[in-house]
Amino acid sequence: MQAPGVVVLRNEMIHETRIIPVSSSGVDRPHPSATIRSWMGDSRGHWEGNTLVVETTNFNDQTQLNNATVSGEARVIERFTRTDANTLEYRVTIEDPKTWTKPWTIQFPLKRDAEYRLYEYACHEGNYYMYNALTGARAEERRSQ
Image 1 (tube, rainbow, N blue to C red):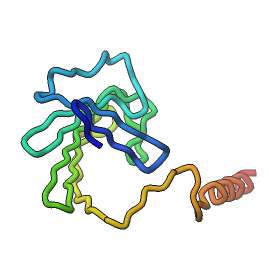
Image 2: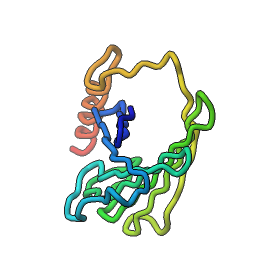
Image 3: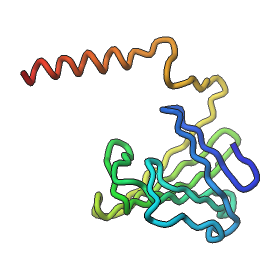
């Protein structure tokens, strides 16, 4: 969702919503003090032509990106570019000198699916996660005894 001065990204999992202030230059809305840390970090956006560029910093030392815990020094740069009416190119560069030896980048297209439905994460038909997670945990406990 987009409104004047902000872009809102809603993730399907665990009710995560990022409210990203967007400026024309990227410098008139600086990040807060480095002493302020959060799980999702602090995101700031700006436009470079038709690309939305989002820089996220101020992660806490327990934040996980793709199952890797990053340090408070992590910096993530995301680029969202509409390449046609049904495709959004997503490109992200992750740098964290305490976790990786050098920055790394991934890129892939996000295709529009007119049939896709966003379901509430906590419960929906066919959600067997809790049963499977507990079954696995109990089996792990039996092995370690």
